[in-house]
Image (cartoon, rainbow over the protein chains, first blue to last red):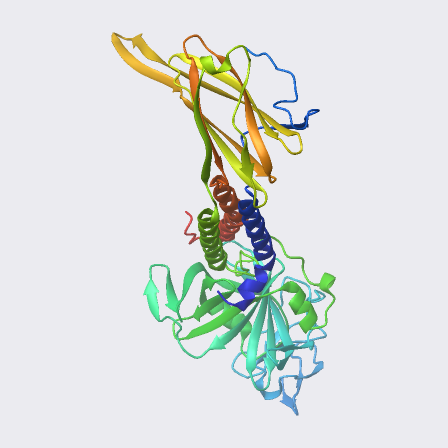
Length: 59
Length: 421
């Protein structure tokens, strides 16, 4: 590998370094990409209550 | 035919012609009638070509351009036609008084500069090629050709020489070696691919006047401005960096168990849900992982979960199902054990801000199961991100290498010596 090769690869290397930076940031804040656990976020009317929504019956 | 002071008369039409190459010129064409003749007295034959003399070469005779710090002048051009497959290409003889002569060949809009070398370049041989200075040169073609057209001056009898020699070309793009041999002579030339726009710049010719490039030239590098080996080395380094980063992330992650308890149906009393005791997250955004174990056996368990931030009221709702079934199938006189599902489930919640949390659990039991076990871990590193990062890093190199290999294979489609066949 020589300097010309690095110049030719500059856009790939920029992309790769950005990806690694994002990977590092994700690891620092506990961000799992493509998380299979699907969550729905909502704000409770009772901020300090035990639960703020009605029970959903299932099965 | 006679000549003095670098002026020679055409033997066909008697036009006076001034020799650019002076005493070096051994053959030329008449600019008036187009006949090809030799300056010496040993061969009085005159050649007329099938292609009319009105043909205008892309690089005009007399055009000058700087290559490698030396000014070269276009002395002559020939169109050569291969005998077996009948394809043709153009060769320009260029000359610099210090460097001597060289050629620019053009085929399908792809250009190569070719110059004679003093010695046999074959340092070591392998079947179908040789190594020179550590580089592998592979046989691309063998051919014999004839001159179909000539214009300008030549330092050798290009018509006879072309007709009497056999040619071999060995490539390692963008370089190649060409061997021109006859019964009593052998000439090695080295060549290098030159971009079409570079030729236009060198000889100050409008780019549109040069033949348009078609496909991949046989000495044109298949890859762009970097080598595939450099790309692979870069990828390996980046993947190693990914593992190092993941190791550091894992080392600094708390990965701490903050709640663990068994629940039974008795814990619910008359309620339809049960809540964990509160737990605290601090130190910036982090993840939690909830592991559920339910001793189901040919049964199911389903639950909704609400992770509640007691400070802000924010809820993160999700569901999990655990089911495990197994048994025997009887077929063809035998029995086969089968099972599906499992007794555990896992939930991962990303980027939770600091705060005090608890989890509300809304379970629904199957027919036999009456309890479950739940454990909550905080600041758990996601190992799957490593996989996605490696895929993200590798996707371009993989596509690029497939593309380059495909182009490389296409390059050899016109060769009788393709390593892909």
